[in-house]
Length: 372
Ligand code: OSB
Ligand code: MG
Image 1 (cartoon, rainbow, N blue to C red):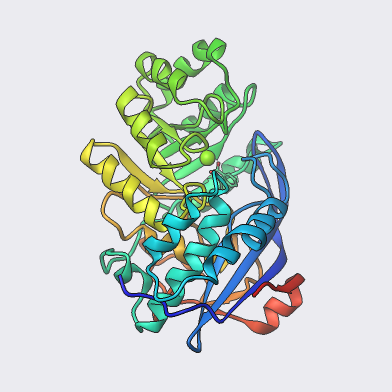
Image 2: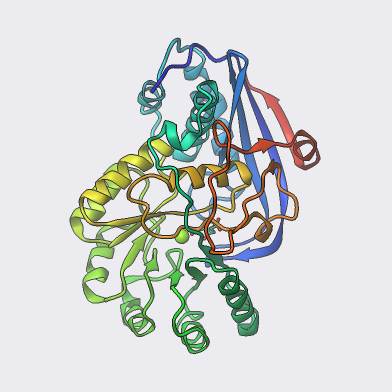
């Protein structure tokens, strides 16, 4: 990969976009997407990166406040000292800061967008992906009423989403799955528990085998890998890890213990696109399927997830849905739309391919700061 000469400026924006519908998981109800955005400029070209953190530490320990602190006080001060550097060199320097992967990923994403734009090439090409359309997938939140859920699934199925994920939690699981399977016996279905079960609940999780799910995502504790290996031996449903996999080392541990058959790669959670690629390669070598997860991203992060899914190894549909499912107005053009066959096209043009709309950015902006 080519080099960046030196960083000329770094700007940070906070935006708050209302969600079309509240999104309920076993850990929270989200009504807005509050995102930190970075704009990094060099040699007259700028790149954008979205930090996937939320305002609260309910999915993981990082929040918008911690990532803003780490970006401003540690990552950018390192970045601005570098001259004629590669992305790999930046990531190497960032290694000194432990954890805070979402903060690191936001900077990495902006640098990759910048580099691709400087070369006039789309991001997927820069990272070694294939020129292809990607599969779509939808993640449907927990609903108070069964009718609501069935209606949402019907809508997604009509749109030709390639697989449907429903959020579950203890006590809102077996009955829900049974009703869904009764109405939709053959859809590609999976469930995401967001770490709501413990090893004492294995008798419940065993009963999931009756529903022929593609996988059960993160059934046990958010940072557990070891106990999942016992669970996977006792159930037929493939286990998919999300929260537990924070870096390549975690992925290697999970693969060698047999803790899962599938990994959900959220590029932000693992520290960016370069690490995602390394994890996907390791998983492919070991016959573990991967897919790209989502964090209700604005069009910036959503575009990154699309480019990411052109890499080898991303063989399962991810959590990339149409923009209109989340936002009536996004901060970028073009919005993500599904083709009649449910596929999604790679945004055209250099870098991530989408254009930040300055008027929208202004309207949804909750803060702005020039960091460098
Ligand atoms: O566990 O995959 C998850 C959203 C926020 C936090 C965690 C998760 C999710 C989703 C939604 O499932 C994925 C999306 O549509 O962006
Ligand atoms: Mg998940």
